[in-house]
Image 1 (spheres, helix red, strand yellow):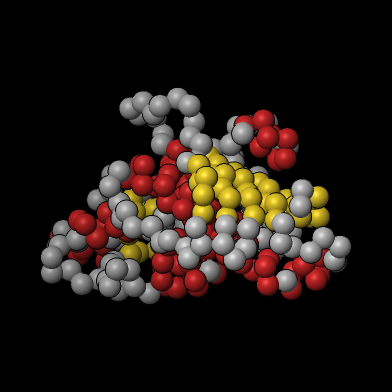
Image 2 (cartoon, rainbow, N blue to C red):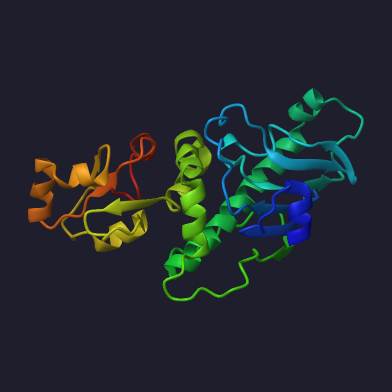
Length: 266
């Protein structure tokens, strides 16, 4: 799997994780999808023009090195291949983009990437929400994602922490842009808070620590955590022992505003 990743991605590093699956049902296809270890240095500069890095095959014939509609923009860092027997072979790229089968394949690929990220996040949190949505179609040979071979030692960053450091801006953009998957993406978001002691936590963890009488999720945005810590308004919440999310990234606030509420909390 590692050598295959390096051959298709031209990356010198091993992949961070992968998922390999056969989709069966109304549409059948095979796919391997990889999460890289490092984000390209210009990833956000080319965000709106960069194409998906997943190669499209039809009956094992390569038809597109990069294909716009396979994955949404915020997942453009995902590498891999898709091989479908159901797509027509001798048609133009424009005709393929309009093909209904492509939309079904794309939807399933997005779901598999989100499931892979959810597994990595759960391994770190150890004990999140275990419900996984099942598709109408049966999928077999769904192999577990590849993790780094060394087991995490105490003090070593988890696979999810490494991924979040590299690709958090993509997930925030996804939360802003992808209406249909916003609730799934929101569970992957991580924030510094007034009580997290420099560690980024999930919104689920924030809810677990909320006071029983607290009805809302509170956040403050600013240029840096240091500046926000000194804000007079924050002292009121500290006195009341209310945890506040600290949003220092310019993508944080638009993402939360789109979310509107989380698990019933505004």
